[in-house]
Length: 276
Image 1 (spheres, rainbow, N blue to C red):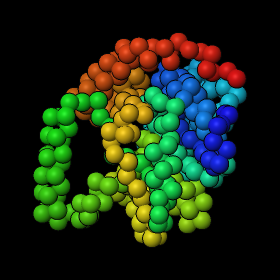
Image 2 (image 1 turned 60 degrees about the vertical axis):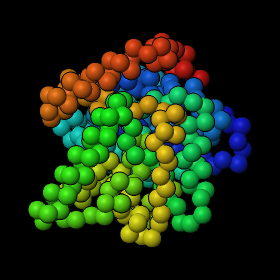
Image 3 (image 1 turned 30 degrees about the vertical axis):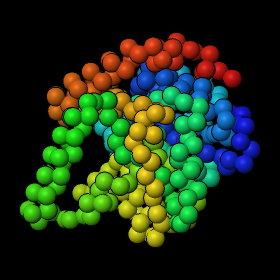
């Protein structure tokens, strides 16, 4: 991709995929439309797709495709973390961005907040934001209150305690930026330890243990630049349902509401973004 910022280092964006062509098409087209100012490398790691989505990915000459035919939905979500680990070793970028296939870019400066935080003073090795949610502010507040209460009960019950600050201040992996050399030089992994929370905590915890800092972007700023459907792949793939029916129905409603928006429909129809 071309760039107007010659001083910006190469950025690698890595997206795991499994049989969600329609969603992945919107994700990739949104990246292509809104990333012309950045020197960008896009890596897609396919975790064993056996439908037409794999042939479509093979046709995209502007991405780097890693095929892992031995993977399947049965290995999810572990193969999401191993996909990032594998791509990290072959990526060329100074910065490595983890991304989900249900994340869609809205603005041409979408990576600027991440780059800003990575340039902050100190040993900053990662930057990102907390969860984005397509939900009402009141519902989000309810989740925070209930989540705090549940965390307190768990600690009283003798479960392994963690700092409440750390639990709420690590870059979520739906769209987070890392210094690739730091992760490689310290042999870090995105794969969680047993009983460890995921979603970006694992890699952040390892960085903290090595003396590196992580930076948080305000959620409102991240939401201005991207949309994260959250469980969007489960909402469009019958082969990968969520564990609870209520969560499944909520994910499907979120996906339907987003796909009805005009800018998403335009990306769905703009097949010219698939070619050079």
